[in-house]
Image 1: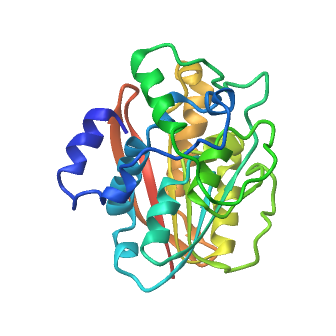
Image 2: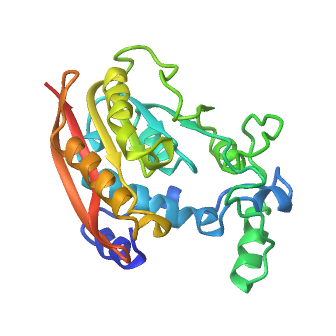
Length: 261
């Protein structure tokens, strides 16, 4: 979601509650540890605003529903879980300690004025939630602990997932299925989401990676995988909605919502 699209979309929905606008409280952690998180994901207002728009667009019924059991796979900074929890839902997330030395982990010092100011704000207040020994390769651990969210580590590429059949009302997976495996395997992951879910499955998609856009074989494989998800109808679920959006990569699928039948 581009900054322009985010800002324009926010104007169509109720105002984001003030509680989600305050900076994260990361005084429990060293500056070095905090700097392992991408700078844009250290801005709580930005994270919360994007989550607020996604929930209103893709699962508005969760804003007024009786308490639900919600699972978000690859939750990262957990902004959506934080919002759902505030609405009384029972939430759980997964993440993966992917930020190894040969990955795209940030680990960049604060050099810009806005980064130095943000770092000062982030470290000004310590949170009072339970902390655990820092896990190598999990950059979002400080944010998740500061919010007191229930998140466990799991590699989304490994099936089956450690959840019982029909154990959650809703299963969400935003901009992560591409990292779980090649397009030919995406259907298997969707099958797994549907095994766990009772009512709805919502999947968000990334645009094709820059390194793969000019590879015809990959583009065709991804298009076919997305078409298959668009027409999904098995395991007790069918596709209810399939949305498109525009980024610098052009027009591409952005989200899919499956409903139990």
